[in-house]
Image (cartoon, rainbow, N blue to C red):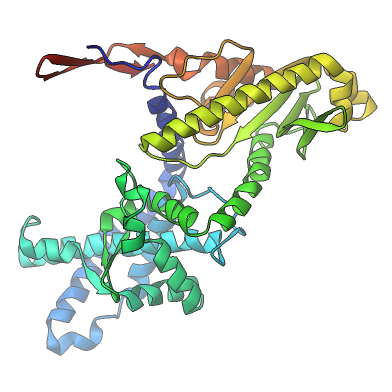
Length: 435
């Protein structure tokens, strides 16, 4: 039996674009990060002195002497790491979720990363001083600390300069507690590790891995479950953010970008809408965009299947309605509803349709659509902007590049196959590589 989705593996290429963007940010931070890291040896010496002071009764008064400089060092590294994490820009800073601005959740991630980086270095120095192997029982106890919940609340309250009520709410959103552990989140493979785990009513186990690897992913899943109304309200604001970021790629007088959603009506009833509209005054090409900002759902098959079906159906319906409207009413009517000036209306010549997902837009098992529409993700567009366009991006070049760079075109057989024998059955998993 040969089990293979048609067009399998496209998600891996979209994840690769996410990773490309993270690496691109890291490259832009390299000089600053190297400058900060140049102090590593000095900081480790300060940590060692602090540890030795705690171990010596005579020097007990000196133990906090260098804390401020050590904190500043790890704070600087934490800010850089947080900025390149997936989820850092998920919502605008001012959005409220559970009565807390998203900016404060971002700052809380920085506080967790700073604390985790410090702990990793402190443990490493401590075990080195004691000549204790990393795989010892003592090392494991140190690496997974259990602390009083009030201590974590105080950490957030002090680091973010907020009251205990909001600090407690932030603590809850980074914590895997009994209630959240019984939700579907825990049954999904490959989800983000929680930074904090509730141990009884008053204590929390801290996962250094969870603090340093995808804390935003856990936070977003927690916020979505805890505050569904706030989540929907915040998500509604993402379209304007997405539109603004897209328009930033098309600067100057050559491009006319409509700063609002455009609604298309037929017989006084709303037929559909256009999320973003870009006119290239030089070529007459007009970019007509549907923007989708769906929640990243990890490896959860039920949610993935539902998301794939909904996205495909919504995109297909949108494409059909926009194309019908333009063929029925014409480009002059499109220019009119877009609010273009008379001098710009006659420039419209060539509509180019785009479906752009923030995180994903293609799925294994879905055959590539045979239509004149460009589909891609935001991170794919950013990669193409850097690697292919430089300063020569236009509506036509983006449309052509996304169609040429489609994961369905880039994926190819070639990786080793895996054969699993189970009784009378033999399951063959064909390997695919991204190109």
